[in-house]
Length: 435
Ligand SMILES: *Cc1c(COP(=O)(O)O)cnc(C)c1O
Image (cartoon, rainbow, N blue to C red):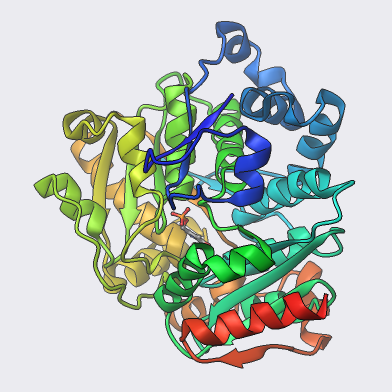
């Protein structure tokens, strides 16, 4: 399988090349030349398959011969070696809990898969790979955790100072070793812009082998399909579910849409956004206009220019009508997000965090129009990752899971920089000279 650049100015490459470089030389995102259809047999036997088997069957057409079957099976097993339970919240809405991984967020899946692929590809190469990643919190922690101690790879994380939660900051600043956290005195969009500029910078690319671990990278984006199949495995109803995905950069929902195009029986998608609603704008006007991000309670979705939007267009051949048929939009403000958390906690005894609450509200609105359908929200993080927000809403502490207690004993280490590209460049070139 080859991947082409969505800017169409660079040559197509295989999975190895796409995973190592992250983005094409023409700055386009890589996209698979075709979306393989899964067989009827795959779906008939889905309920009895192991998580690792599903992961392997779903991803192997994309990986092709760049990783031998035996190694790819091990990578798949390690990637999904935690639970993905589908919990019933009430008669109409279920929650697919994607927060049982090591950093308590769904990004563990993509980060674990990608880190292991890059680890495999860098074996036998004397060129160090530098993974550069901008984060609003969860990406950084998942990537840091996934890549810790992976030989031949350095990770540099940019995060907006004061705009991530305590537990997120600890997760991305306390690991040390091959992980460095740059604390940027700016917004997440500043961090993302700096990372994009770094990939386009000639001097940096001559001196370093830079790659992205944002959902731009196919090795992080594509494995996010896995858990849509785990949801279907556990779905107890005959009519396929509506799936509501809390969306920021649109990597998660685009992975779900790939699964859908491959044949996954999903009735409909809700792209649930917070006040950063460029997608709603596109659905309503057919015009896509990036905006500056505004801060909300669901800060991992504070994205004004979603990177994966171009992939969504490509998946549907830029056909606005088709897109509208498969995906509904919604934009949820902070007041409704907070009300949803309180309401669901009181009525259904289920504690949502802000991103899951946006998905819940979006699904609820959709189901009001289609009362015969039932659906699933993707609960993308554990409430404790956003405990500062959740605590104020429910007026109760959120218990820290035992698996996270060790973090509070560790020391934060970060390098403070201004939101200026030159400061990032100097830092990166400094590391290049030392090596
Ligand atoms: C990253 C993130 C999202 C948004 O996912 P995208 O793939 O960027 O759309 C939603 N919820 C949480 C908790 C996240 O960390």
